[in-house]
Structures are given as structure tokens and as C-alpha cells.
Picture 1 (cartoon, one colour):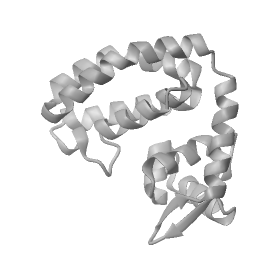
Picture 2 (cartoon, rainbow, N blue to C red):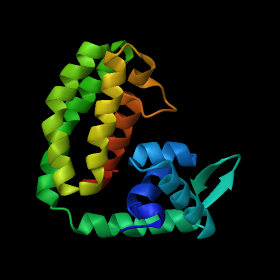
Picture 3 (tube, rainbow, N blue to C red):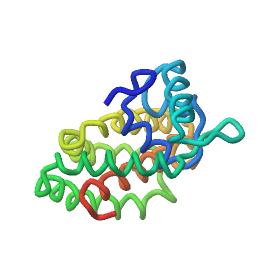
Picture 4 (tube, helix red, strand yellow):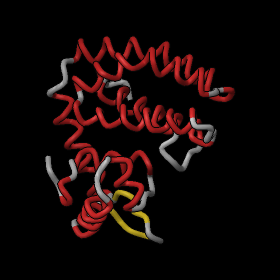
Length: 179
């Protein structure tokens, strides 16, 4: 559903929830929209009482969390349970491997895991289209790691590979009814 700044409201609300406290620039980058669109969406959430602003960042209010849950419930109804269950089952071993790998990860090991997870994330995006943005986030983080920027492996306050992996894990577990 288009929202202020032509941003998908469900993706916006979920991004704010997953990041807990987030500024307009980070929202825009995470959602893949212009800075102006990110700011418009940020401002609209605050104006509608769905988010509260403090020190240049927002977090969801009870109203925003309720709206998010309503939209997630509506989305889950449209997802084929058997198909998303298969994606979940295929993800679990990759997730276990990722958890074991991340502390000592390097560009090559991340690239290999990314290559093997790509089809799974394609399938996930087919069932939950708003999650297709995560493929770009994985690609961007991996490219930065391969360029020698090691903070993009697991830095928590940016869309590092580990941050994006953690978010997609939460998204998949929620879509599969495992959260």
C-alpha cells in the first residue's frame, strides 16, 4: 500500500520496528527510496501518531505497532502456508551455518553463503514481494565487504550483512508463523 513519499507502509512500519530507533536517511537507504521520500514517510508516521520522534529518530508507538500487526496479519493470509514452510525449512540450516560463520566471516565465506542462499531468498520474495528489497541490501553489504570494508560484515547500526540477515530471519519466521 503506497504511503507518504510513495513508500510501502508495511515495509516502512516493519523497518522502523526492526531497527527500533531510526532516522529518515537510514529509512530511505533501507527502503531504497530517495531521501525526500524517506523524510516524507518519516514525517507522516509522526504526524499520524504511528511513530514518536526523539533526538532525530523515530520509534513506533502503540498505534503504529497495532497498525503493523494488522497489516502483517493481512499479509500472512495471502501467503501459501506450505510454500513458506518449505522456504523456512530450507533457511534453518543456512541460518545455523551463518550463526557459526559470522564471528570469523570474510568476504569469500560470505560470498559462498550468499550464493547458496540466493535462490531461497528469490523464493521468499516470490511469496512475500515486499522482502525483495533485502536482496539488494545483501548485495550492497557483500560488495562493500569484498571492497575491504570489514565493518559491513557485522556492524549493528548499519545495513551490514549480519544486520540484514537478522532482519530477514525475523521476517521469514514471522511469515512462517514461527515468531
